[in-house]
Image (cartoon, rainbow, N blue to C red; front, side):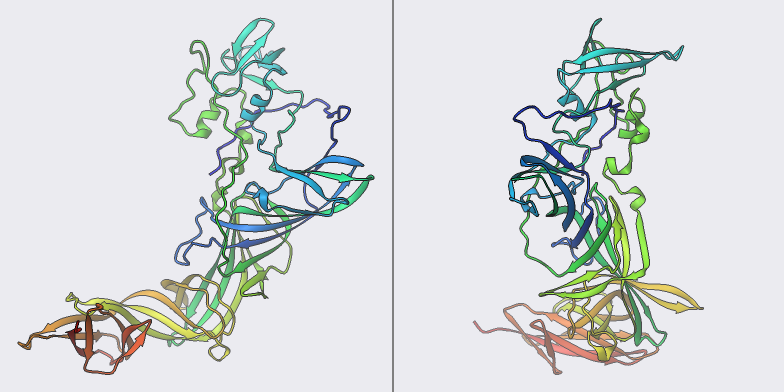
Length: 519
């Protein structure tokens, strides 16, 4: 979570950075002409868990195209407006006539704290307003201490602490100190034998993104088909917006090592009066950041936005139903491309439709995984919709992992009847959607006393529904025991599997014996 940044008004006079003799000229590119963003899911996040908007662990590959005029010789090129979560070691820069000498991520963002720290020893103006008369008074001052604690100013009248006069006051800076940027900035040093205008491509990885699939399935009244629709939900937790961007998402798990990176420094300015407390000696430590800032004269609280605080503005979701993301092959993974340029805004989500498959054939199975020796009260089975991802079943398209909301119709209105998940499924694979427990299908294991040295058990499954149901039980068996059923069992994932059709308003039973293995 990024630290909040308040904004103190900065009034700039006509400001031109001169280049001393022998110094490198600085060329600033304020933003990309074109941008392409590919979002990858958080590698460890389960499809059962939703995107955590406050802790996005996915990442993005961002490619920017910029038109830059560069002078002859060696110069510093500043790429403003890159993603705040950029991994600078991943940056690739192409297009300079003679290549890049070095690159740097500017470590300090423009903020009240960094502005004061970088202005130490510099001359500023103090603007004060009389509460009684409204008279505005300005005087020169020199900053003698940084933002850690009381900010000490020297004026013709002596030394004082900022915001300790009891009057509304504002610092006015003549310019922004070198090395500070209002936006995340990547700088490179490049050479050119002559002045040139180059089309430069900057590509890099950035943290703070994620995406997921969200499925909506409508079950037919007969329970044998679903109409399947899916949204592609993109999340950008970064402070940078990517406007009019070519946008795509990649499904599949890529091997990627975790890389730590330092966030640019931009702290909150907390002022304390010295040497004795006066009107602002205590900055309400128990109050929220916004409340505290509202009580500091001269701080422009109305300039603070959700982007500054690092939170999602009302968890903003932009839904774009008219667009339909297209699936493309990308080696062993799948790529979903949005066909039109869209804006992936800072601290927001965007949803784009990417799949619509009506009339998918499904079968309802009631399933449990049981310990063969458990004796318990009747236990509800899980309801699972199963199908196969092939054209014959009405599918035949790759399905990225995501959540599923299952509806049916009652009285002409959709009714939510369950929620589940879909794992990543390629064409031809089985698809299973666990919907939840089914109170009408229960099981119970009881021990049968035969008076011998072996243990016999009976599993009884009860169906109180008006139609037969398919029931499956997987058995957990200890390694030192063998299950000997009185019916033929299959196997799934190495476990014994009993499959049976339980009649309407009826029961089905399986009797088995547990035998210890010979040493």
